[in-house]
Structures are given as C-alpha cells and as structure tokens.
Length: 413
Ligand SMILES: Cc1cc2nc3c(=O)[nH]c(=O)nc-3n(C[C@H](O)[C@H](O)[C@H](O)COP(=O)(O)OP(=O)(O)OC[C@H]3O[C@@H](n4cnc5c(N)ncnc54)[C@H](O)[C@@H]3O)c2cc1C
Image (tube, rainbow, N blue to C red; front, top):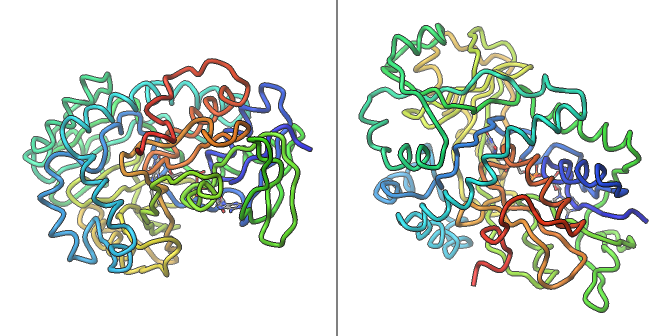
C-alpha cells in the first residue's frame, strides 16, 4: 500500500506526487483516462504570477448581458449550463465586488509570489528547465483606452508587487515583428513566462515519479469506504476497492462528485475553454501573447502555435462546440494575417472553477487522512508546483509556507 494515493493525474496531482516523494513518501496516482490529458493538456501554457484578479471584477458585470446572448463571445452560457449553474453564476458575479476582488487578489498573492521559484526547483529536479520559456509574456491592445479601462486591475497588481511595462505599438512590433493589424500598444508582463509544451511537462513529471518508485493506476474512482473518521478504501467503478493510507483529491473539474462523497458541498463548475493548435502556422512569435482586444491567447508551442481562450458554462463534459475554437483562429488573423491553420487540431477542456477564483487546498474537514487540491480555475498551470509543495506540507504536518485560510474547503458557508 502506498503512503499517499492521489486521485487525478493532471498538473496538480503530478506536482503533489513529486513533492511528496521529495519528503520520502511512496505515492500512487489514480487516473481514469491518461495522465496529462485533462485541462493540463490543452491550456494556453501561461505561467502568470500577476493573474491574481478574478475574471469577475468591477466593469465586467455590465458586459455580461451582451456576452450571454452571443455564442461566439468570450463568455457564453449554454441554456443547460444556466439551469444547472445559476447559483454558481450568481456567486461568481458577487465575487466581482470591489471589496471581494481586493480580498481575492491579496489572498492569491502570497502563492503567486512563489510560483516562479517553485517551478524553477521542480524543473531543476527533473532536469528539464527547457520546459519553461524565459521570454516574458506580452498583452496587446487596439486602443490605449482598453488598457486604461482596466486601471483598477493594473493598480491592484502593482500594489501587490506584480509589475508590468506599458509599450507603444512600435515597441510591440520591435519585439514581435509578425504582429500586424490594429494593435497600437501593449504591456510586457514582468515575470510571466510560458510552458512551450504543457503535455511534455506532465509526461516528464510522470516519468520522474515512476523512476522514483511511484506508480500510476488506470482506474475511475467513484467513492470511498471509511471508518473512524478516516478513508480506508477508494471504490472504483468496476466495484474493486483499493486500500489507502492518505488520499489527495486532485481530480480537477471532476472533483465535485468525489468531494460530495466525502461529505463536502463545494461549488465547483466546469468553465470550458477551447484551442486551435496550428502545427505549421507560417508566422513566428517569440512569446506568449494575450490579445486583450480579441479575448484570446497566442502561445508559441514546441509543436506549433496555439490559439486558446473563451469561457463556456455548459455543465460537465458537454459535446464540444468547435465553432468557438474556429472563432479564435479567425480572430487571430486580425493581427497575424499570414496565419496558416492547415492541419490544425481543435480541443475543448474544463477549467475547474470555484466562484471566488481561488482553489481549494487543505485538509478535508470530514476525514483526517484526506487532502483536497482542486479548483485552480484559469491559473492551474501557474499554481501547479506551488500547490504541490503545499499539499506535501499538509500531508506531512509541516507548517505551510503560505496561509491556507483563504483556500479552505469550509469557506463557502
Ligand atoms: C483553454 C484553457 C486555457 C488555460 N490556460 C491556462 C494558462 O495559460 N495558465 C494557467 O495557469 N492555467 C490555464 N488554464 C487552467 C489550467 O489548465 C487548469 O487549471 C489546470 O490544468 C488544472 O489542473 P488539474 O490537475 O487540477 O486538472 P486536470 O488537468 O483536468 O487533471 C485532472 C485529472 O483527473 C482525472 N480524473 C478526474 N476524475 C477522476 C476519477 N474519478 N478517477 C480518476 N481520475 C480522475 C482526469 O482524467 C484528469 O486527468 C487553462 C485552461 C483552459 C481550459
């Protein structure tokens, strides 16, 4: 029997397993599909330490009605999503009040200040520093007014120690000569980098975990058996049971039903995103670029150019609407007219989202041998290595490096 059994083989489960091994624990990962193929596969690959301000924030509320009725807009709620997630959506909007946003941003900041250092150690350990690019991300705008409109966000980031440099359109084109079209200015995001191949990161972590004696078990966890306040077995859909000592629940967007089996009602929604991945894009950019005026991210990946984004509330595991991915590629041509998407692949995946944009990281209040680590929303790649460290500290009973109160599983009232 392993010392720690981790449910979920995404970036959060893998980074947790690796950090636990560093402390001498034997680990096993339960993965029902294949390691690294959940949200951790198709994301935009940004390591975005200053992304502390939630999506729901002052100024967004007035734009939402327009988005809700535009299936090609940056945020779309499918009718079935609206019915299922209405309470969640109302909580999400409530988190956009100025006082709440300030609280969320300053609660996320201590974790975010560590992410670069934690990834540096993790990548050093697996001897793959190449899995993180060292070129800072860029944000682009058609009009300076779009940058100014978000002054609240920029000031809050600066106040919390996350810097940026405003640059002119000429400077944008000096950095990225391929950028054409209506862009007139941009922002260099201090210390934001990108993973040129998020899947390769998962694969490298898995290989290292296995090399150090960890094992990966293909199985679908559906419940638990417990006694005297402890989980003793994980139950699989086949009816088989696995004896466990300690459990970490890191099943991304699918963690909700398992948390419920642990007696916890945690508001976790699937906010789907899409990407188009062009293997021979015919255009070259050096850094990950968030085109704010278009609402999507362009990331130069090891295997081509990825154009990703959009938020869709559609309930768990809906049929993909790839039109939303196609729209991203069409919009990208506004600034990269020569973009070639011949041979491209399209992908949809779920951001595991809690209404206040903060993950759940902490000991389960219901069972003393269970640790929760899910709900990382749009910042799960960014927080991976740091969450892994925190999980290992919780399991081993060490004082955590950051105050975990804001991430508590009992904060929902
Ligand atoms: C379009 C898009 C763009 C994004 N861009 C960024 C970005 O640029 N930067 C950033 O920081 N974040 C980004 N994110 C968010 C990030 O990808 C996620 O927050 C992160 O990958 C979540 O990792 P995870 O390990 O929690 O979940 P996942 O990677 O989804 O892994 C969960 C795993 O658990 C397994 N599992 C689920 N249920 C069970 C079960 N019952 N039994 C066994 N196994 C189970 C699944 O099969 C899956 O492999 C983006 C997300 C999307 C969708």
